[in-house]
Length: 434
Image 1 (cartoon, one colour):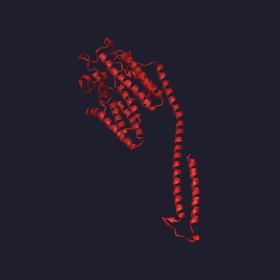
Image 2 (tube, helix red, strand yellow):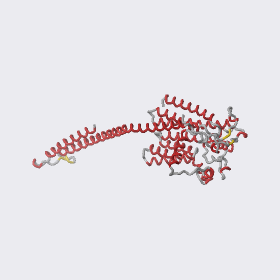
Image 3 (tube, helix red, strand yellow):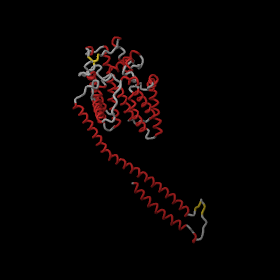
Image 4 (cartoon, one colour):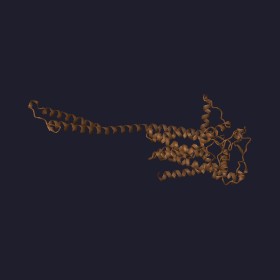
């Protein structure tokens, strides 16, 4: 990587970290999806020195609502709150009775307190510090996106810069990276797996080991990391060159490593709850409405919600951006899709020309091989005929006969006709090979 792309990445990371600091400061504590539950998980691990247990009813669990989550993100953040004194280890948030989800008209889920104002101290300070861990994971995601794009298009550094900028300036990603959550770490590990999957490894076995480690860490962050499995399968098939035996061997290698890294957590859940994901108790309280698969209006609403929440949806998914902003992102998606189609159409003739050139090169190579083979064969036959014409059979002279029965003149004529025919065929083959 040359200095200009490196400088571009450094500037993009500085911009992202500056925006993260702004989001961290501006977003009130607890005003993000399930953020209080995620912080409660961090505090529990830090001070109880064990993993949380789920119990029926769910409200009596160690960490209600989030205790089913894999522990990696919370274990990484736990040392940052270990300094809190005993009287600062409880989360004090008072629900807002006028919150929109409670039937009111206010966007805030909790009543704000003066202790959240700058300068921070105690639990509010620790809360913002743990948010910074998500920010570092977000910065890693930006950097890994840049590196993955460089691997995908090594001769077009603009692609890497634009891809990194798209992630760094993504409003929803900035918001998620400014919360206490496991989503930012999962995004970083997903970007790492994408970057790793685009490699051209000299040692596929080592590649499989690192792939298994990254996949295992992702599964220790969130169960939805299972969706990254097909990416690894496709990458394994590509690296093996379509050889199914090697693909199977590499897949088994990274699967075994994944089990060694993350299998213990899912085995624990199966032992404790009879469910490897530990979702049975969670779903007893936190259930969603059944989706009407055959209803067109339901699909339209769901897709609108998905698009909006992908780009920009703040608070507890109740604060919407201006409509023009989402229309701008829709236009961006449309332009990007049209550009992809145009480039694919432009690349198609080039791919066809490349295939034709490869076929011509292969034909020329085969023609040269055939020419050499014909020449060798002609020389061999000429030598054999010459030997017979000289009366040599198995190294002994042929007995002389009368001139009427002498076969040599006919052999010489046959030899001459064969030489002329072989010469003409060789010339034609050589012309074809050019």
